[in-house]
Image (tube, rainbow, N blue to C red):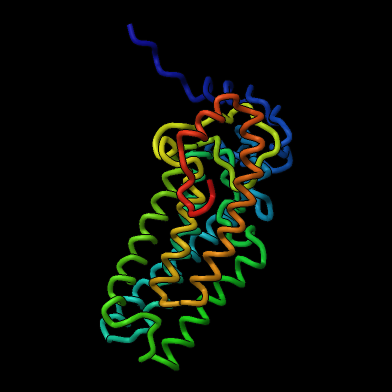
Length: 285
């Protein structure tokens, strides 16, 4: 026979036996609790709140919501403005396109981390202020070059009329391919991916060699390198294109050498893996 349903008195008795002070670790703060009631305004039990989720903390839910809201609005507005300017034949459409690409990139950095590497999903995963001043200066300079060139010199181009549509198509292809490669790399690596270089191997870290890693050793770097160059081709920025190419090559070349020293120490099989794969960035073996 099926068990008879519990009475309200029995339910309240069971709820009263739940500890009001959680036994959680350092991520739980006892004075921050969500208090539930039994329908009569009387406390029934208290649920602990993870301190890291509170405002002004690394995984602040309000902070994540605010940044996602801003990036979503930025993406929507600039995408609409891009379409409008293209429809009107205004070459300045490239500027809002660049902001759209940046907004989507930073949102996907967090979303992919949250979905495939939840433990590392914090505000820093947006990469909005974690890349340093040089990162912000580079993108601001690229945007400024685009606006100045297309506003004051709309009839001057850095390529012939014949090459322009091909360069634009190539740039758009690199943006899409680069974004896909980076997001795919983060998804495939899962808990083994981190935005900062790890000097100590964590328990959950494994050598990922399947999926996109079966062909490229550092696909996230490959993706960002070509994504960045693609944006400059779309913008029609000859100076920023050359500057981005040189600075990113220098940065990734140094970073990859440093990372691979640790990988060779942690994984004996990494040497064979390195010999059969490539990085995909010119002149970085």
